[in-house]
Length: 491
Image 1 (cartoon, rainbow, N blue to C red):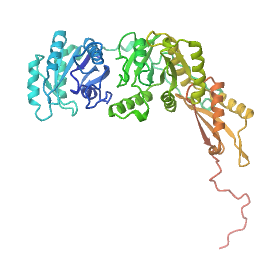
Image 2 (image 1 turned 120 degrees about the vertical axis):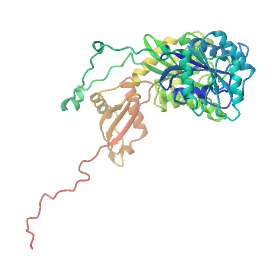
Image 3 (image 1 turned 90 degrees about the vertical axis):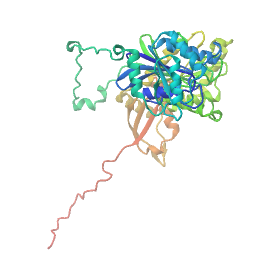
Image 4 (image 1 turned 60 degrees about the horizontal axis):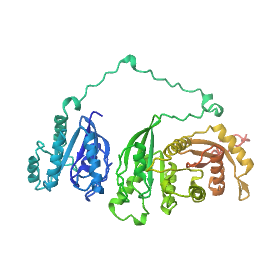
């Protein structure tokens, strides 16, 4: 991206609507309630031929610095300092307020380029608010409608004029033909190689591939504090109040040279307690973050672990097929650690049988204790989640398992498991060709699943096994008479 733009303004002037318009997706939560956005959210924006980084911010308010509103304002001011250009959004429909004038003066003192944006200019009676915006002394206001997409051409021209042609359209770097690496040509395999299970190779894990990690849990479990400790800065809004985070915010970070995209999410309460529309939107955003992630860290409060909601969150992550790691946070508040640790291990095995062998780490988000162990567990779990097993190994394993514990007989006929292969990874999925798959009992499926975990070292990740009935090639073919009649047809 060429430059960075921050969207600022008082609450409920349409900043998040404009953010969604520029990024082309509904990333930020939008509601009529003032103060929906609390953290600063970055995104990749495109406005006609302009490409830049856009930052959505919380509404500017005058408040004590120790209050929630004061901490939100500090996050907004940090975005202004980070950005090359600021879009100051005012509500042309409602008109200027004393708060607009205060923050207009604040931006003028900063000395950075500012584009004054008069949003909701399509509304009836918005002319008065538009002309009042001239009194802010920040140049000509740009009339737009973020909701309907009106005025985007004028906004484009205003941004180019404020940032400068050189920053808006940097010269492209021409690539020398000699520097371009030659790509490998993939030749088709011989027919013998395609079906030879013995020659099948298990792919190695890519240690350099970027990794997407979502942090989920109940409200006030310490998710945002954990990410801030990872980053080493106050990037996300934190505090003693429960339910501060509303949007799912992604931040990029590097751990031992590997790019990690951390996604902070809103706390998930029991479904019966979620009644407000805004909280429902936050929970839906959290569910999207879980589906987007590869590994999900479920944060437990070590002082009150294994609440019913904790177990439901783990079950949700497993059913979505994500790699899961449990982080017992606030470990610095535990006194008798040995006894509590033994209790946590026993409850993890007993209460989470669907995630048998799941990795669990004790951490302290406030002090940073255990974060390296947590990251190593995330990497190890992701390796298992991406694991592929050669077909020859799987079939030898299947034969050995059937000798050890044969499939049951149904209606006097024993079921036969003939062939097994891995059809996918992320999470590992297997297909077994067998007779009468609908008659295979759940107990035998659990026996095979647990055997895969133990024999191929795949703890704590979802394992999917699909059973497929082998087709009879002669089922629909008419039987040919081996003794045709030799009598001649009489005319």
